[in-house]
Image (cartoon, rainbow, N blue to C red; front, side):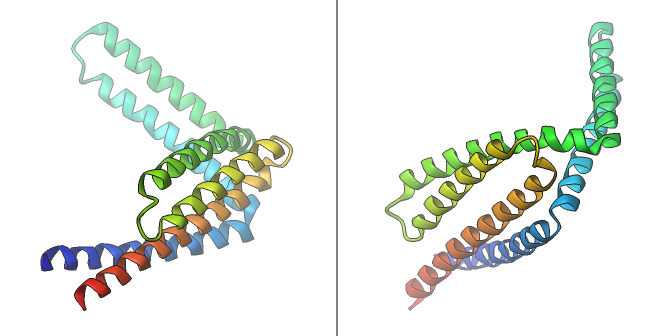
Length: 184
């Protein structure tokens, strides 16, 4: 039991640290929304290119010609698509804005489900709060798209990072307080 308590204390320490990083990155994204939106779209574009290179590399590990050609074609499509998006970050940003809206809807619904599963536990209200904020942000993305996606994604992602960080921080502090009470 003591080992579990030590582990939980260590895990909550790491969780608190990550929460603070999330909050700081969120504020940075809100302060520099266009730069953060473009940076995110360029990062995603290059990740697509790297994924394409990975497809090309794994094509040489297959045994059949059909699979080889298929993986080579997929790799080329990823490289060309990711390269195009990297060279045209505005288009990438508009596309990414819609993807982010879908992610936020799914995240909000999953957090809402999580709240209903664990609502009897201390601190579960923070999970509900996070779910509702995330769903509100998804609504704002869709409402503002596409005309304001160049600044909206940075601000909305920043706000989501801040609230996610606060949620993780508060939940971690509740676990820490619960551990302190159990140790008394």
